[in-house]
Each structure stands twice: as C-alpha cells, then as structure tokens.
Length: 122
Length: 108
Image 1 (tube, chains in turn yellow, purple):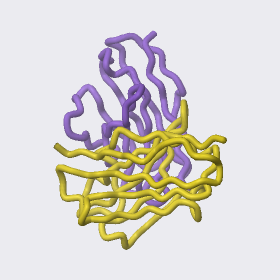
Image 2 (tube, rainbow over the protein chains, first blue to last red):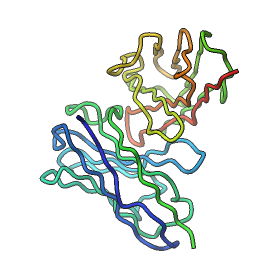
Image 3 (cartoon, each protein chain N blue to C red):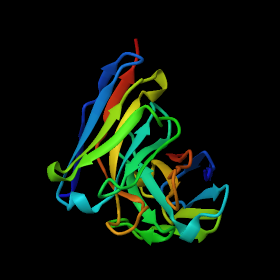
Image 4 (cartoon, rainbow over the protein chains, first blue to last red):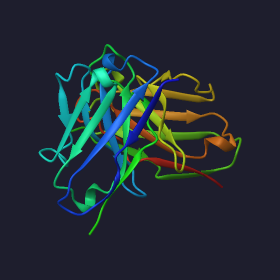
C-alpha cells in the first residue's frame, strides 16, 4: 500500500524550532518529487515547499523562505521539514504529499499523508 | 504568482442535483496543468483530476473536469451523499504551485 506518515508536530513557542518527518512506503520514493502543504485551522490549503527526487531542485513559498528547510533521505525513504523562527501564523496541519509522476518536474499531488499539527503559541 | 479564484464560495444543493464549480486563474495555466482535490472534514485532500480533465485513480465518472487557459470547471453530474465536501483547484505549471481558496458543497 502506498503510504505517507508524518510525525514531529506539536506545541512550540514563537521563535522556536520543530522538525517534521514524513515516512514513505509502498512506492519508489527516490523517483518522485515531494512536497509539504499546510492548512491553518478552518482555512484553505497552502503549498509550503517542494524538493525534486535527487534534491537538485528546491522551492519555498515566500511566507517560509529563509526560515524553513526541506530535505530528504532517499536511503531512508523519508522527507523532512526543518522549521525555525516559528510564528503564530505557522500554526497549521502540515501534510506531506507526493508528485504524481516520477518524470515531470511539476505535477499534481496524488498521495497525501494524514497530516501533523503544529501549534505555535506562548 | 498565479492566483486562482474559485466560485462560488459555497454551493447549497440536494443529493441528485448537478454541481458546477469554477476556478479562474489570473494568467494562463500552461498546458492545462490544473488539478482538483476533494477534502472532507478531518481528512487529507484527495486528488480528483490532473491535467484539467484526466480523472485520478478510483474517481467515479459522475465527476468531470474541463477547461483551459484561465477558466476551468469541475462538474458533479448527480451529487451523492459522500460528495458533500470542500473542493480545491491547484495549478502546477510552475512554482509556486498555488491553490484556490476552495468551494464548499453543502447539503441544502
């Protein structure tokens, strides 16, 4: 079964740091670009960051650039998001999601994890 | 950055009725790189369509996607009880891969 499982969420104070992980299984992780998408409580979806299969291409939303770092370990079938200098507006459910095609640079997100909640509050 | 505007914000319909959801882009979406997602409360989004009109695996044929350029449409021909949810469009022709704000389809 194709699956993504996020972990690492929790409560953190403003200015603090958190590292999210996403464990992939059931497919060739090293072939697909991967992404983080977040959803603030009661709000819509916001793309956060993307990383290509070999980590050659990395992109960030302006709202997190300079504070968040995406990375992956293909040997461990894992995706990560290091979040520093966290703000209240970073409070959200964070989903990892797979690019549908192993060939295209950009694609739709066909597999999603269940999400992990990050709360930034004093 | 391509801004996607979805309308209406909320659609109140009865089971068996037809639903038509719109997604308009602020500039042309290259090669129709437009996706639709369905999200139910407490669940992750589910891919419905990619390439504007290509149905994802397991999506019933009462769902259809169409459009090109700046105007895209998701149609549900006859609403089933499980179709009441929030629907998002997303463009993935370039970075950032932006989402629309969503359309909620609710039971009338």
